[in-house]
Image 1 (cartoon, one colour):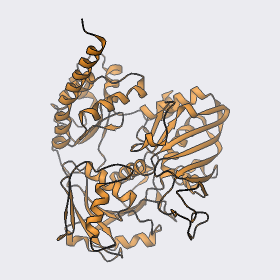
Image 2 (tube, helix red, strand yellow; image 1 turned 180 degrees about the vertical axis):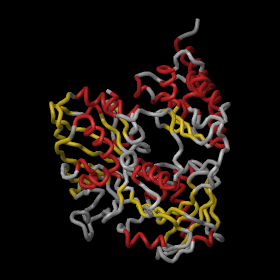
Image 3 (cartoon, helix red, strand yellow; image 1 turned 120 degrees about the vertical axis):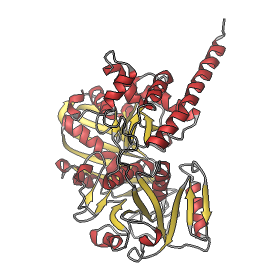
Image 4 (cartoon, helix red, strand yellow; image 1 turned 60 degrees about the vertical axis):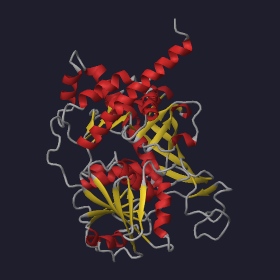
Length: 489
């Protein structure tokens, strides 16, 4: 009879074997079908055996049990036979849907019905892809590059073609590549990077990136590098109005511009999941708002849809950023000249007011402030709300947990109720904001919600989603979700 330790070891080895069998299936679906797979939002492409096991274990936060690989491996095996077209498929949610809606059908019958829009569509009318240029290569620019490289697939979607920067030194290219390769917060680049100083290019996992040196956005001829109808993603924050950003549109090879900061004037501030459908082909300049606006707007919409929001205050506890001084020195902004590494710094934020640009029904209802703190990444927004309709802590948490799983906001809202999590646990989160259920306070119509967010990576994922909408390359998502959030609970 096996000892308990022997049984545990045998179970682990079996799970490793199942994960190993999944890797080639995940890879072929990605390379040959342009199908991206995930488990409750945790990407599976290019994951190791341990990475796959951790993604399945995460499912216990969703429906209280670990997702068995015995359920997801058969899904992948059938999916690999269906000649799928481009799609984003969540195996965790798909397995859950099969349990609830399978109704005696075989797995293949269920999948053919559920994924009917892309079954037998492999290679059909494959688009040429959309060229992307990153103007600026700072914190957000390099994370966008990592995501674009990771999602390159067969080149039918977003294609990172170039990065535009001001030359900083004689060995500028090597330094830029090194910053892409190593990151003190997000860790090493997963893959290989080769630098060609003769042609000023960086080759990263098969993606050839032309590095263009310029200090004037209106002087670059992108067609010289074979770039056409590109979307320029301006990460510098130097220009925030239509006049300044229009300089990019004057360049040959540029069709549209996306700003990774709140825009000024009449520019559309887009929070994906909220108002991305308002983007039209005539919108040549679009902004992706701020990291905080992206974090709080989906949660505020969910709460407002169900309970109504009479008014509220947003307090942001935000990691310090590069616009602050490490040691006390002159700064044009109030308090930001004081050492970011040594102080909590009270400062202003326009995020609360900016919510109204994406969610007009909350115009004039929110105030906001921010405290910059000595952490390098991951922030928290505290939403102190007066609701139109009274509720309880359990009802509010259950509703938000459900929204994170089964609503059209499931890519924006995450939910966790662990008593041990701290800020660093949310590094690398792809969601715009994560509701900390154990911290929720609710007394009748007074509610306080605590929302974590990776203000770098989570925001960058939202930027990519907006970029996909602008380019018209956002893949269909399966399984499909309910369209009426209020009907979910």
